Length: 458
Ligand SMILES: Cc1cc2nc3c(=O)[nH]c(=O)nc-3n(C[C@H](O)[C@H](O)[C@H](O)COP(=O)(O)OP(=O)(O)OC[C@H]3O[C@@H](n4cnc5c(N)ncnc54)[C@H](O)[C@@H]3O)c2cc1C
Image 1 (cartoon, rainbow, N blue to C red):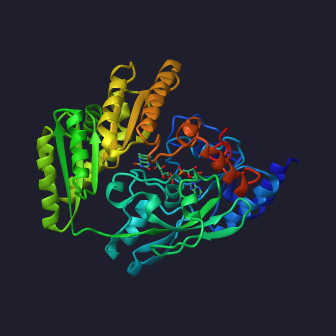
Image 2: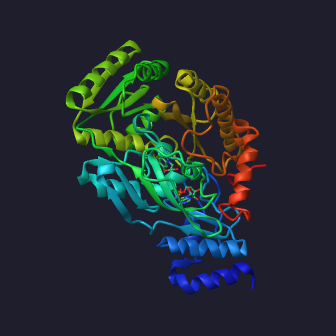
Image 3: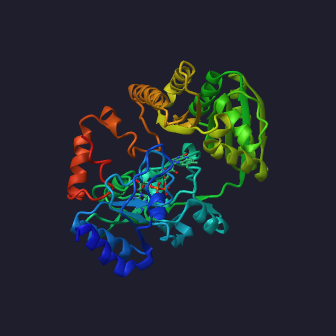
């Protein structure tokens, strides 16, 4: 009997049906939302408590078996694919809200709680959790990918919003990183080390995140522009004027067409900004008027704003679902979706160059973005099974990444590295990669946590 078989047999005694080796369950855990091919784990274990996580990880450490944490599976770059087999550790059943601390504006949740679940739970407290990656991702998964989304321009990313973590280390020990305070200067910041570690340094079991007061008034707005340059320059001018927009999202003409077809909207086919303002009624109106004036200056027209919840929900639903709308543009395609982030002063240049690359290629592509913080997504609508199309998308993506790096930006603002972007990591970080590898080797000496990814770059 191999050590894998004997470890699975031993775990089966405790987990029973919560340890599965069926094809369907392994298949579900063998991919994420990326274009990367599926790779099956040998088994899937559903943990229901921190002790159970520690039990699985200790057993795997003992036997040298790979463990890949798996939550909502919504990551975009192959993060959850168990490259070396082993156990996919499913955390979705660890979904308890541990403690809401209204007076301190924070909440402790188990890692598998999803952001929509958290929002529903705290709605009556007058507080909300702002980070909104579109998908109903888990808080543990969002911490692990250092996620953000449409509201990061105002409220920050997971990096700014995670206060503390409980983590099962690769040896199966349970540690706490951070406190519930706004500040601490006591030692290495292990919380930040785990935020964005993509499951390669241990398993997060509990997360303490900041909450924010629900704004008195929320207004949304849409504005179409004559040109892409005008739309993006209006964003830059808005940010540089210090207007605290809560959301400012760009959709190019192709993305608007996709949103119209998918969500039944009737937006003008033009580069468009979706915006949101938070504050008192007067303050929201003031912000909105100032942005309207800026938009006018850059060729914006039909600036429509509304404080009606249904208008707002319809707009953001359409925005979030643009990722599912690709097939309305090209039936049978799978988007090669990627993201970069540049300093705001280089945004217009970066977006226009990305568009020009697509226009000069035989591949269709669309650009959408959380442009308020310099972050935008490009989706190449390809059929990955056609090698020329995949190679062309890789070529365009590589140009996009290199350009972002050359501008002082990063080749991922929020989706992270997973498998797809590993080969570019050294271009951005240079010799700092050796330090990342050393950290991985020190914390996970047997390399069992999500192997073949971050921390093991050649
Ligand atoms: C429609 C759509 C829109 C999206 N938009 C955005 C966006 O705007 N911004 C953005 O940032 N992302 C976006 N994403 C990507 C995705 O939602 C995020 O990457 C999210 O943070 C992943 O969370 P998850 O729970 O799905 O994690 P998973 O995909 O299950 O896992 C992600 C990674 O984290 C690790 N992991 C998961 N849970 C734990 C844990 N408890 N402990 C340790 N490691 C763990 C996994 O091993 C894996 O490496 C989008 C995805 C979709 C489908």
